[in-house]
Length: 482
Image 1 (tube, rainbow, N blue to C red):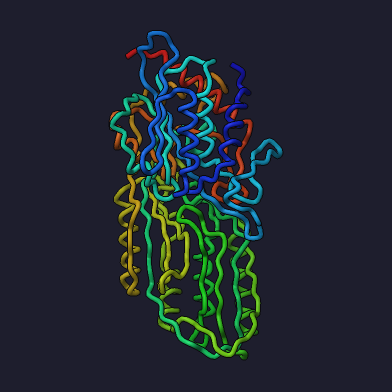
Image 2 (cartoon, rainbow, N blue to C red):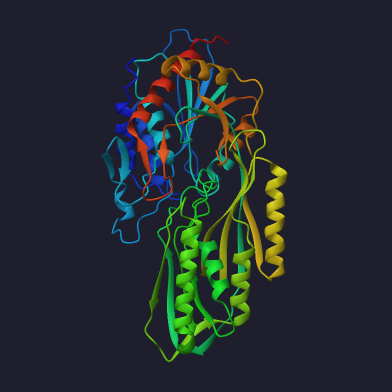
């Protein structure tokens, strides 16, 4: 089969991109998948969360081989540029440019829409010989793997499992990090103050990115940088009127804003200090990221609301103390981040300053050690501390027939060996490996870049390469006899 053939994958990706499918809003795409199966007389099941399972029998006469499971999640992280007028309900516009697929000033959703597209292309063709297939489409992966946590897999009989939710061609993943999300909620008190100089501070221009895949790349986190800036300029004459960085746990914060009030006599000095801090941040991030701190003098009002000095200091201190970024590297797999934490969102909700965090680790005990540190920080400043969406890691297995077959096939097609490694991201394989127990599992995918950002893009050639690899792997697995 022609190695470049993969047009149906791209066709289906463009088709599903027209359907809004942000995390927790998957009904439309889920119904589309059910309709797809029913039109082709395939066995299909949809649960209350909108997870979908489609089964298709092998087209090999008197088939007596293993059943193979294909899996990906249908939801996506939806972000758009600050100045974009894109309407979420209109779906994602896919643009082909310079050999890549982009979106129009929004996230593309190739994470993990490309897996859905691969599965649909497999289910919709009869050219290749394929094994019995069980295709699992999950929901709410980006919101903490809620769909895969609750999905009923009692009727799944597959021996081999292929997850298509990784972002680098030629890399075969055989393990992943577990994770847990966290909210710290600081009770806030406010008071009326006489306004003098009101200054808006915006941290912008940062790359952001996936809080697992890019967490070890030295990129700036806007929330942590805002905490540092406020700590440097803080004194008893400074009032904090607003802190805000709406975001997601699994995306590195790229934008944050604060509004402060200072005496007019201090305004010039504070403004200069912020500019000096901007230069410090630019120097620190010169090899890994971009940053711009924008300062604006706002209209003066007679009286405005600000946080009390006690609340202000709690906010700043917690932001300063929270761990963020890479914490430990693996000593087994080269260059793999083993443990990390991302501070993903900062906003006032119900009179509390809510800080959303995401801890990841491929070592369970380290994950819970970081969680203990976070709880201690919260307790020290009288904040509520909630942990949720705790999911398991997927551990490497010494023996794997599907891994051995994948290595041989990849080398045969591309004349080079794939990299066998693990990923510092929350693949659903952790839950699925635990639920299905004896399944032989592997994960791979095409080259994707700047995932969870508005510069997200995916290589067209890599989509086609992975398609050729996937169908050859399925053909090989179908040759095995039970």
